[in-house]
Length: 123
Image (cartoon, rainbow, N blue to C red; front, side, top):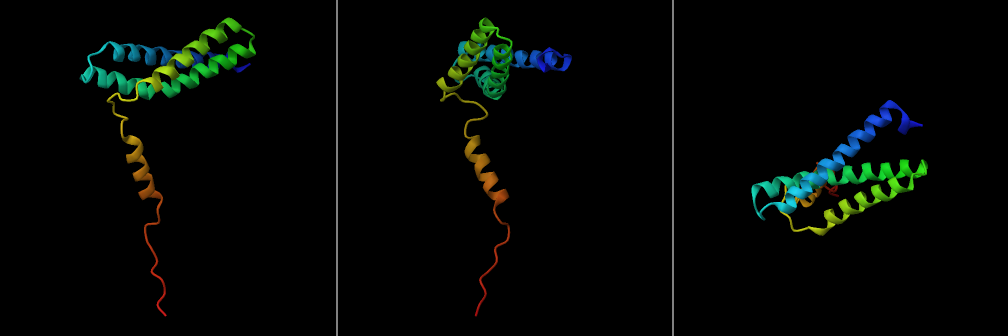
């Protein structure tokens, strides 16, 4: 089984480290003064690590479920739901990612649109 191999254990350890770092920056964000640089940085790091943390917690849940370790499944589900809740709860935070969706969509539209347009034939 991959989870018991050295590579699997290293990947799980890296995933759990990402989860812990994500939750620590969420705590810093919660305890920082609104509109401060510290809160901006903490919010940016939290938003950046939230999706990889959710994936890592989900993999941990899957591995624990396959191993029939229901206490670990419950704890990992709690962590995963807590990260998802915190990610969706504070939408008005100022961070680097705010407004990037529209900018990235505009960039992608320019990149994937045809660069040259052919004029209709006169005739």
